[in-house]
Length: 365
Image (tube, rainbow, N blue to C red; front, side, top):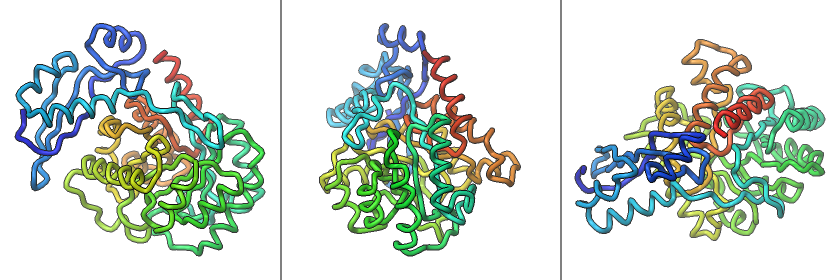
């Protein structure tokens, strides 16, 4: 075993369908976040002082034997992490009803009521346009509609809270009669509160409730799910030479800390969803490493959301400069997310993403 230090567990050796069921019954695998995927191998990572990390791969069936020489405290930590990885996630409740029991991944459709978002800025910046677009996404299969009035693309400039309110509230009010839940994509507590009053039932904060000091208390009082995303700095400067000791472990630690802070503020853990924040203060390689390391985040014991749709790292890899023409890369990264147990995918191209999701479910049934 590696020398003592901070322990992380990453489930690997993912199985699906009947193979997963047989392996779990035989004691050769455990369910990943309650299924339908299962894992057969655990990567035990030990991060020592100074940031360097060592790891070993251990089969699930032999885990007890292979960690026998660790301290009792380390063994307890590994057992706790393993339970968090395997446990069924609590049902997602919003607006007083159950939205999902996680039998299938959810699709969150994007509605940017902005003139300057990186992919669709200016296409839906009037309330009537945004409402019509949201309804078309619902018809295409969106399970959640995410409404934002402030562009958080790299280099985006701040707008006033009033500008943000003027953009999003008429859209939320125009969609409040729908059964599909609405999430408000905002960093500002005033906007969050107004959006919830207008009919939104989920808060999606790219700053993980750090941008506005009032947002923690406000979310503690609100009975709604909260999406906590990692972002390295503000949109104005987040892509200025982003640097990490280990991007996957660093972001895991950040989100673990935010989950703890939210709980201490009175936000129940079952209401929290995490997002590693692809493209928010990350290089192309950072994004690749995060996508390849997604299973590690199941160790935090909450639902996992990923947003890769049309992002610039896809263009950097494929050579496609036009964001709206990156559907192929978006679908491929979504497939990689599903294969690692991601529960929510945030997308622009809902119809195509629904087809990919439904086929994935059928192949893994």
